[in-house]
Image 1 (spheres, one colour):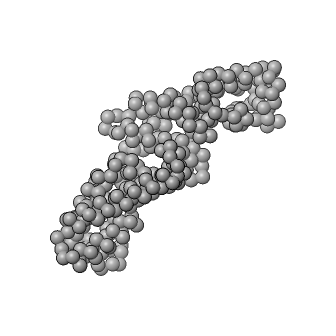
Image 2: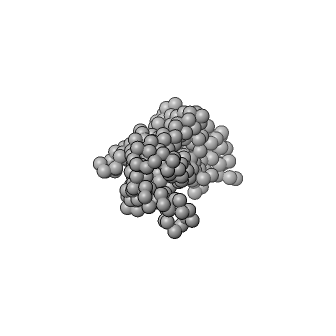
Image 3: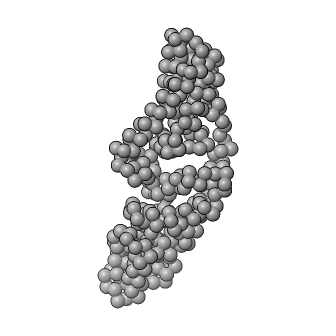
Amino acid sequence: MRPANALHAALAQGDDPLGVRLQAALASARAIWPGTALDDAAFLEHVAARLDAPSPEALDALHIDDLFLACACLHGDALALQHFERFALAPAVAALVDADMARDEVLQQLRVRLLVAEGGAPPRIDQYSGRGSLRGWARIAVLRSIKDERRARSRRGHAQALADDLLGDPGAIADPELDQIRAHHGAAFRAAFASAVAQLSPESRRLLRQHHLHGLTLDALGQIYGVHRVTAARRLAKARADLLEDTRRELVRRLKIDRAELDRTVALLMSRLELSVERLLASRDDV
């Protein structure tokens, strides 16, 4: 008999040791995480996948209350997500993230990393086995995130280097006009882009990064921010438009050339910016 079927049968029978233990585990979990909506069948499937054998001893080896919460988060229960953040994630961030990193930013990144499905794979909280506490698992996730962020920071340059990446290696693009603009107006563009990114709100920078770099869909963004996908799409479009428009406005202000050359220069640089916005945003320390 499949482990899940054995658990279902034991729970239905209720009077053998495994059934009694399952009933008590479910009652405890629902009491600890009140209001969390999770179907018994879904939870039993989740537990069965983490049991060595369908026995009371194997069940006792798991942190059932924590596993119940993780399973509810995996199924997208809003209250479970709140419980997880309050109980495990936020305390770990507060305890482990140093003052030189924005804790709100780290918390937001972890919400995405742990609770949002990416690339066809389930959310990473599905990897929680129940062998240790959920708080301990969250602490490990936070430490890994800090390590990844510090490694990424060591590879990233400042805004001027990012604009250089946009303009590219002169030998990489066979475009004499762009080569000339790069030579004469590269500094102005770098300054204009840096100014435009600085003017974006933190949420706009996060939206652009999450969509363009992490490949999060509008549905995923809506889940993160608690809004409809249409609202997420509007916010994303506004963030992108603000970045492009602020870059263009600052570029126009900085370039001291005649109107015909100005229009041509701005148009070419902005077309390149639209194609490369995700690469630029990939290297922002505060995105």
